[in-house]
Image (cartoon, rainbow over the protein chains, first blue to last red):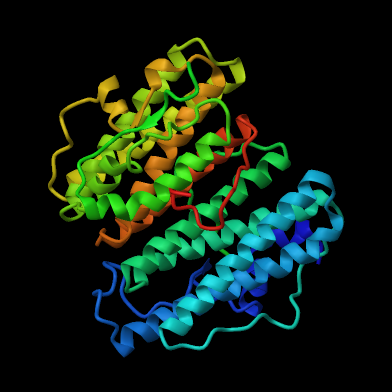
Length: 194
Length: 210
């Protein structure tokens, strides 16, 4: 599928993220969540139940990060010069997120998901295609993290998730700049639902 | 301005808190020493203690919201001072106005959230002295680069404060709004860093301290 069709067709995007391991509910990419919407789960001393819920959320986040790593790798062939340098940096940072999430999952007694053998990315024919696809992936991750953040049981995990959201938002600002678009279009960064 | 005039404001802190932030302080100093204009004085005192502690010890969501409103108001005022300084190019002034608008939106949303919780917005509007309470030196800026470097430190303070707040906030929607605002401040950082030729995204985890 070409990128324009992918970006225009909500069902294609949803299908893509579902196949990549991201939970999709009611048209939004969300990480798996075991608790209600009104408040974070009671911070506990690490009950099995809250740990298990955290592991599920973190593993869904990990799926997105691993997909982002694969996407930046796949897109690198179309990038040149300073944009290629940016792509490599962002790839490294997504890998850092993935590594951090894997450690957190293990700390919580879970088993970290692994990258898919392959991802059915849309066809990326140019540097502009790669940048636009990267913006879409980053925004999807932002929306998913923000949706999931209150579900995490531990304050440290919530703070770390916010730090990752902020990093993904920084990526978006750089990518939009490379596309000659407004880098900070809105006062509230909410990302884009799948 | 001389390059060592922007300093991180001191705060009330005990020894343990100073130690806690010492690593961040050293990193901040290192960054400042490497950037030329707007460098952080080596004698600077612990990293943004007054701001970070205010959030970190927030006594419940309303208290944290009050502190956040205060910080956003400081940012609004600081961008206003920068705009009025006549030091900015047309393009950079446009950026400063946009960022001031964003901070105003943040303050408005936080104020509405506080009132929803039955709280009352802090009546006091900030002065330049309050800006100095977060990051010192806005009265000494002499160039657009100085302004950008000052704004970087101010935005870093905001990011760090929101980062800390995520350990304390209870309400789910406030947590999400906080993340959304923190991410916006981080995007401001990208533009400001690029304006002074600094790496726009130096770390994989944006905590406002490294």
